[in-house]
Amino acid sequence: NEIILSSLRKSGKAAVMASEEDESPVWISDDAPFVVVSDPLDGSRNIDASVPTGTIFGIYRRLVELDHLPVPEKAVLNSLQSGAKLIASGYALYSSATILCASFGSGTHGFTLDRSTGDFILTHPSIAVPRRGRIYSVNDARYFDWPEGLRRYVDDVRQGKGRNPNKYSARYICSLVADFHRTLLYGGVAMNPRDHLRLVYEGNPLSFLAEQAGGKGSDGKSRILSMQPVEIHQRLPLFLGSADDVEELESYGDVQQKVNPGYDI
Image 1: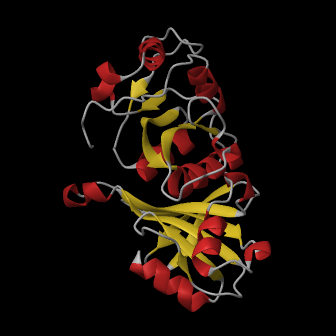
Image 2: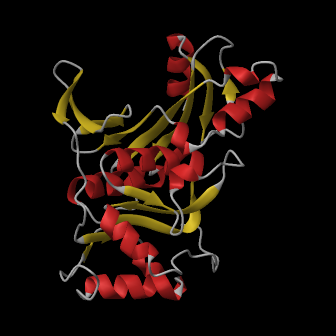
């Protein structure tokens, strides 16, 4: 978080940075053109186990019409833009390779770090998530806490009784960037049905990438990028992946887990 903020200050390009790690957005410059939202270290609880982690970010244009407002107010309102107004988003995945996946509104592209030169090389141009996959990614240890619609969906796809006659496999890392990256490449759906993930820092940037790759981002009922955030740390269920898989999941109706029996992971 400190490294990203320091880099943005030095760049001269960021007016404000909103981070999952900060209670309020940080105003950086009155003249810079862009607004940056970030989850600096996704999957941080996995670090001690050497499980992949990542960084998620989204970029908006500064709303110049808000310049007359007090700094705290304009910092928040600039950061609460709808995901439909994103001009770019991306993530870095720290794993067996360091990968930067980004979209500037013309497709989703993956770059791999060449450690010998320090350059990111375009290795995955114009990523296209398959219309349908054969993998679902979710913590299904929570199966008995799920609503009936989500249980039916998972029961159907893993038995080959869904719209796809193939039986689905489960893959779950519990690192959102890692689970989403696999889903982007191989298709299927990555999800957290609880009000757990943050719309501003995770839902919007990853949904932008999914849509630019031909996929979908949903809260189980509605398109993520059509939502208007009302709080900086607003949480929601999140379903990302292949367009046909996400649409099929939505058709089951009751897929959002609104009751938390008490667990915090």
